[in-house]
Amino acid sequence: MTAQLEYPDPLASDALLSIQDLWKVFGPKADRVPRRPDLARLDRKDLYQQTGCTAAVRDLSFDVAPGEVFVVMGLSGSGKSTLVRCLTRLIEPTAGSIYFEGEDLRAADEKRLRTLRRSKFSMVFQHFGLLPHRKVIDNVSYGLEVRGESKPDRRRRAQEVIDLVGLAGNEQLYPEQLSGGMQQRVGLARALANDPDVLLFDEPFSALDPLIRREMQTEVARLHREVGKTMVFITHDLSEALKLGDRILLMRDGAAVQLGTGDELVGAPADDYVREFVRDVPRADILTLRWIVRQPRPDEQLDGPELGPDVLVREATRLVLESDRPVKVVAEGQLLGVIDDEAILAVVADPDPSASRPQDG
Image (cartoon, rainbow, N blue to C red; front, top):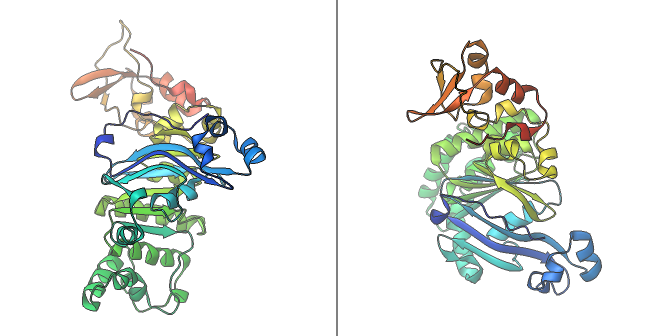
């Protein structure tokens, strides 16, 4: 079974990054696997036994819109880190296409790729990769130095992004004098200094303590609001994915399992694997009222409070439970339906995510 999933996406026509039928296969005669349906449909174990090959990325297709935070999530071995390296051909794909602003990146020569990596893409890794003999400001400006910009210009730009990521006052320190969180901020500042169109994050916070990790997640969310960069964020952490992602691609064994918003994964899991993956998520913190709205009954009074469809269930709980009438869900003056105590309590107490899918009508 292939993993190419088709989802209606109103942003697709304006995609900044478009991936089609992408494969990365490791092993002898790897290019035969995508071309032969009998091999392409094999699972990981059978493929390896028959060919000696491993499909790290398997027939992926998706678009990333300008300004979107696109999260790729999966457990270890799911292929997510291989995927992000394929996007800029740090790892050469076996088959498929990668288009950036309409340009076929697989057709780009090495000179063009270097230009794109220096000006259009920046990557933030789990391991900070800071130069130990350089001070913070020199680490941040390193990419600009490689690009050939003058020292005054790169110092000015480096100071701008140092201020932006909350490192002001630490410009003259060396990496060994910084905490792990501060070192990761230096890595983030270095990625921003080139003013790229796309920021690629490969599990950047996995090595950090939980408290610092949450702080850095908040920092990335803040930076996205302020600078609006398109981001592709790789993680194995579901809470991180839900916190940061506009959309989430869940991978397993190199293949796509489900692509959607966080509330779609939680409210309408595609299969038992996704359902188990999101089982412990507090659904009231993720699902909005549009997931539990129902049509009013003929005898119900519709003079109760009003809320919008994008209000989180958690935020609506007190109002709904305290109201003696159903709460109306209204968008642009149109009544979408109502919410009552039963619907709220079903989300809070019912462990089955399928119970919170939108109702017909």
